Length: 383
Ligand SMILES: *Cc1c(COP(=O)(O)O)cnc(C)c1O
Image (cartoon, rainbow, N blue to C red; front, side):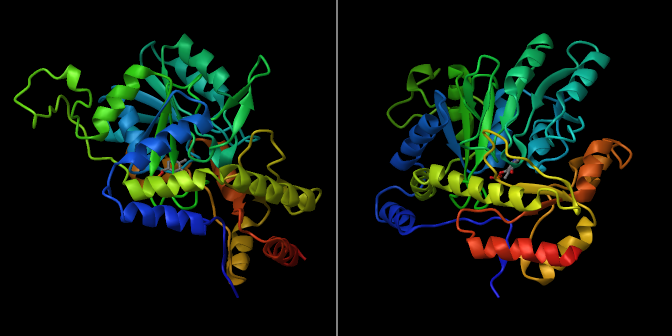
């Protein structure tokens, strides 16, 4: 029997042709496809600037560097996310402070963030990294107001949410990553994400200064604008002005990303359809503790449900070739973060969520039959 994973990529013939075209061209690493992908992605998201990088983690790292995170800076994020959302603070030497989740939305609880900010002297905290977890958009308008009160920057980790949006207080649709509230936003093109490029990432922003800084940092800290060089030795000359990295995306990955982007809306619709089916069949089932609910603007990277007896259900599904997954192990339980004093007693809402959560298969090529098999197998387990 075929394995059913919780998520998987969909590669079309057009995708393959797009990659092969690049392989036969003059450019392998950063070339014309990278710029075209950046422009197409910025248009899709509705922001001014997009910077393609080698992966989502590199995107996060460059963001903390560009915002000047340094040793001693405290940054707030959620424990229910992939470890990279927190690690980027550590790369730059900062301190990660986890605030608990809202048990209804699974997102960083703004009230908990406010409590932290109020309880410390002004200037203790430098920034917030909210995550559009599972594809559910964070209300960044509210986070922006709070951030302004305390003079903080915001990096939106929108890896789960390309195509997602929330409605602001004026009734306007605000796309995840559009840069209207967050200083910077980041995306990933890992194969389980909406848009697959093998590996790949994107930073989006409306801030021109940060845009130029990020472009330099992506390429070793070499000044990308010749007019801003301090010296000139001749036509061969390039100038490294600060310490950067090689976080470039290759041109064939960009071609794949660009090709995938054209199908992003179709994939999103398919995900919404799958989520709606799960919602309907689980409604009123006694084994469900909490369903996601149909949320406007949710982009359903994951379809998370809280189940009674989750661990045995997980094992039973595996025995039946259904590879549901737990997203995520709260980051503060990781041995690396425990060394900073975090333990099980902290952040009880996250721990409770972790005890019950399960991400069920959701991806554009999941067939109706496969989804029915997943649902029937769950029903059988609880019978
Ligand atoms: C995937 C992911 C990342 C990291 O992206 P990579 O491209 O795998 O480095 C960061 N944050 C979240 C929430 C993610 O899901």
